[in-house]
Image 1 (spheres, rainbow, N blue to C red):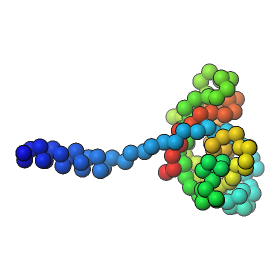
Image 2: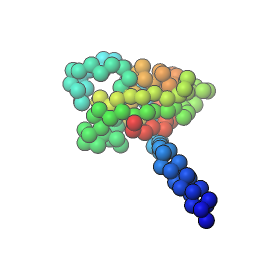
Image 3: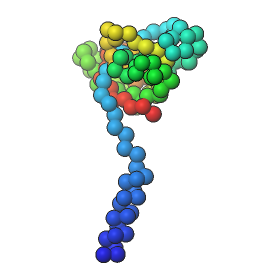
Length: 131
């Protein structure tokens, strides 16, 4: 019994040390400069690795300042054979609101979108999670 008890403890400790990241699925589009003013920060320049949140993640403005890792998983319009680029993921900060009618779950800055996908695709499927 002693060896099984020790083995079980090792497994439980190992599982406790592993962080399980569950990604949500959605779509991403992009918007172009100028990026100010924004709904979160007014005229504060937050750089280019930024995004606007759709109603799905806006959370009554509580999304402001949240950081998301976004990974390209494919295209939506079959316009580009292989739309995902590089590592296919980017980390962005929510600085704006993508109003009703927003075409994606998250609207990336042009620079963030281009880091993970061919802009000719226009809209991509993504996995995303808050960091």
